[in-house]
Length: 369
Length: 232
Image 1 (cartoon, rainbow over the protein chains, first blue to last red):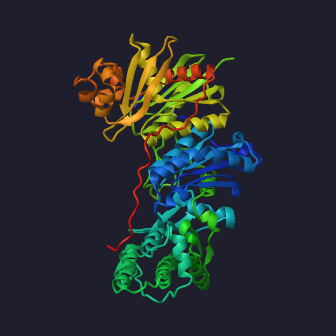
Image 2 (cartoon, rainbow over the protein chains, first blue to last red):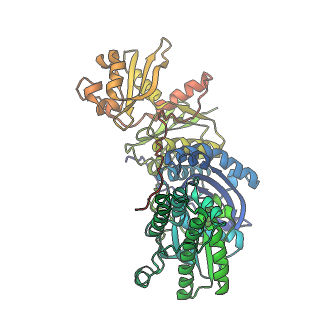
């Protein structure tokens, strides 16, 4: 690369909270999948959160089409930005810092958001923070349920992720206890939705159908829950075997020419997923002596997970915080919240040469070049 | 009033220039056709610095609209659009092929040129251009995307006359350069001249031509429709 006189542009730019009467105004940009989300957060207060989704364009294909999502991000970005600042009643010039999802996610989608964020930070002369999407799913809860306790566990479950985190500070001290070794929880729901002939995305459709079925009709496996698995993967998840077990049951009915009891299959499958998520998180709470769990990510919209979490964490005397569904799916507020936490922690701003990282590990809150 | 234009193109490599009243104050480029999101913003920072100006001094933005590989093209477009939005500036979209044609015809006696660039997947983006009596370069055909062999057949007159430019020439010499790899440095160059693109934008703006920034994708998205999930 030939860069003429390329300066390290981030140097010298720090957020001067002291210069204001109030905490810095952080703009958050999220484009890791099919939602273009932009939000404004001041400290721990959400001013506005605007989302444009291209889901309608994907549903007919039975899954996210990356190029369709990327094209939609390009067209949605400007209008979403305009709407966000207008609804917040601020000007673009009032923004003190720009935070953006650097990963993990779809390369083409992430690229649009990161390029836009760099341009915005450059044009406004404010610092840029490339942040981790998954940590955003936890960070967003502070906007809804108030300041976090000194430590808590974060369970992030979505169509792309299933991770269990031990959090002492969302910006500076997060330890990954476990993650899925194969499918994410939401991904398993999408696949089972397809097995049962339900429309995409499967998550909400399977959830709805499950509410009419018997959760004990089929004894589906709880992945990585046997003693020998628990020794090596106490807090890891696996949903691939479960999906296969569901497929065998469905095939069995089909092969015998019988009608598939779809509601019972959905209910028993949902029960298995929720059970294993809650059981392992509860075990981690006991092991680490933590009294609070924050659940985030699109799959935390699942009704059985919410029910079971409330019931079993409640019985164990553990505080469970699950933000409303609109903050569980991908949105700008989660990135603005995490950006605000990163700014408050005094972490250095990202350079303008940061890359996107489709596999960004949870050990990194900020992006690198 | 002084006009200070920031010019961007990410149709192959990445190119940035700053023009003040038509004079190039700074230009910078990256040859890498796959790292636009990393390289473009530092190139802009470098150009503003070299020009001795800040973002607040700019009065307009010009951006190449392709045709080009999608991900890189979007980096340039979203960067330009967002910058313009943030600073409240007018933005001018210019076909990247137009800029290459204008560059090629500016230094040659011929009136016609075929521009061919890398469309990947064994194809080229192409456009056929002519310079008129008023010295203005117009697209006669295209932009399109096709195999080099097809383009060579459709525009055999220009291929036989050697009036072909752009990186497609170096990529497909057997079809487009009569089997001879051109030693013309420009023909192998992956990077659009951002200053030239800026001049085109200014000229068209003066003429009152609308210059939208819609991406010239020329191809539909690849869509793989998954079948029913089966157990493994």
